[in-house]
Amino acid sequence: MEQSYIELYKSAQKTCEACKIKPEEKVVIYTDTMKSTALIDAFFTAAVACGAEVLIVKAEGRPPMVEPPKAAVEAMAQADMIFDLATESWLFTDATQKIIKTGTRMLQVLVTEKAVRDRPPIAAVKDRVEKGYQIFDGCQEIRITSDLGTDLTVRRGGRKVVPQAGCVHTPGDWDSLGLAMVNFSPPETEAEGTVVFNGSLYLIPDHKLLVSTPIHAEVNKGRVTNIRADHTEAKLLDDWFRAWNDPNSYVIAHVGFGVDPRADIYSYDIGAWESLDGGIIVAFGSNYWVESGGQNKSLSHMDAVLFNANLQVDGKLIIDRGKFVVPELTHCNK
Ligand SMILES: [Fe+2]
Image (tube, rainbow, N blue to C red; front, side):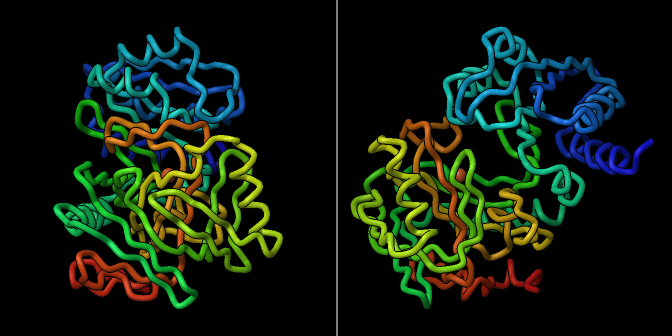
């Protein structure tokens, strides 16, 4: 048996355990033709080993934010637990809303196989996610700044804070394996200031990059209104936004921070970037998701992580140049 399969299986076992899969449960593994057999088998075998009734539903690969085939959605809506092993995300679609409203819990497995092996859900990181949740819960306003010139103020509004620890164990939960972060979706008009992108950019579906030259963008009333397209990467970002030809692409989607000390920025793994301990997340585009209360519909979504930036929550400094400075989250500083 290949070593990679064994490692994937061990990680799938830990994931099933964290998702509290019980013998009487129905589990659907939804996947497509672009996902590796080893990964599918690892989750299938691990879920079967829990005693669950497990079904694999496999479709052709689809573009991002396009729903699975109707029959697959029906099968998923009847399950207790879904491992979503689709190659591209379909989170912000009506199909997701329909499925999780039935009480089905769903774990997306979108990260690389290396990330599946390296960052299964663990209690220590889940604890950090919960502490991060407390920081945002009930706050009024956050301010993100950096030495490079970022100065963005975002109002919290009344939507829920979404903690993600890479596992799901209560009915209707949605999460993504390998993620350890806390976010909220502000009201669509409530972000103002300047963002200087200096870290990772994930521009669905094709662009995943670590920025080498900072990119300046202005945000007014919750929308990106200007990107200073003065170098190649800045032009790429500007062109990417324009290509969608959709005003909703420019709308603030979520803001937050990562809490996983295992996350490695150089792995080119989008999950690691957003989960980076002390990385600050700023995202634009679709956020239509019952869990977050987001209302913005678009085919586009971009996730940026600012490195070495500062986060203040209601005036209190939480992250200073990429390092947590509050006692409940400092102990994992590297
Ligand atoms: Fe995002």
